[in-house]
Length: 513
Picture 1 (tube, rainbow, N blue to C red):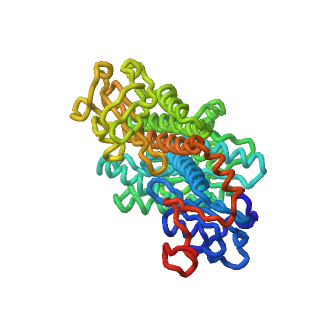
Picture 2 (cartoon, rainbow, N blue to C red):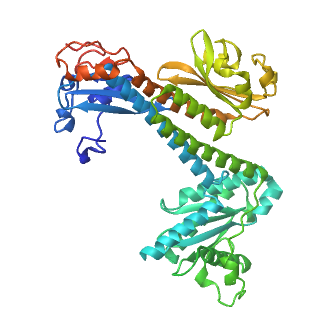
Picture 3 (spheres, rainbow, N blue to C red):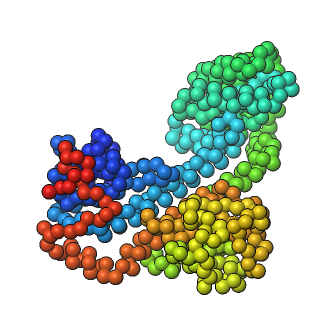
């Protein structure tokens, strides 16, 4: 927000109030050069100073998320150029917001145990380091750690099967996350062992949290199995000055082991209650300084983690590409930069940006030795032909994992070794500009993650192309200057994409007089 008082941030308006509210209600851009006549604002609103405005709704993933509004406090004729420019900004904002949301989702996935929904082992230690550092730095109330072990969980898998075991672990994770304080952290430490990082709490408070957690966990397990398997035991340790994260884990683990080995299963045991001579020397300092062992990683988990790392890296590259394209004003440079980045940084084998001419398509920019041998700079084909044609006609991404099984695929001597193809439509505003075409030598090289990533890149390219078109319009600068200095009361023709705003109480779409 700019140009309004700081206290205006967070102000809410009733649906349909103001130009922004009406743009959201109608789901289309709205503009007016008589703002006070077309809006009904509450008394004291800083928007009562407005004379002209234009509002453009924006969103992503087929959902309306907000509206971008620009206003003038002096008389101003709002023209099509302002509308086009604002629509370009909203497209860039939509792409950036969608990227940020996807990136945040990936970050959460990388820190979350997929089975239980709790933090994973690595994320727990990251939080431990952060929380203990804060306590040491700020002399704040110390945190405590609770380790919870499911009693006889091995029997659950042996007697009821691993699917039941997984269901128990999922239920335990839900019980823990819902049973702790909002500012505490639940994690799966490994296997059937969980942890709760109790922030700003002494050992007694942490013990109360642990007792509630054990009760919830026991109730959750009892829904699936009866008998001695339905239970949990917890160990609690409070941080003291100079205690490392590994030492805090070892103290909580020591309390847990003491409870389990001395007949105290099913309850909560604090570290200070463990006799000092019990298994003396078990936790030597050299051992504590070593990083805690990680639980064994399955092939499925390793593959998922690798996909997350790859996707996160590619999203970072996509964001960097979007920022680079946003500063370009030459269409040819935008297309060349896109093809080059997809080939060089993203690592796709053959890359082409395809232009849609209505009856035919041509290559606007290409990368990859096979495409360059084919001379795609001068390549053309009918619009409906091949996988590119299927993409343009359906206006949807086309992902083919094995082109040899596709009757629509048109091989050439230069691309006969290609096995996978991905084609994504490229929109510049409401115009289907063309497509982005990627090809690989291996079958199954593309997946849904690739399709979503290339859709993100296509959105960024489309926004950049639309912005660049403003600079390439003949006489655009002169026209804008003449309008800004022209007769403030002259007539103008409304842009067909935008609606004039009806006066309050007038029928929807009624002209303003």
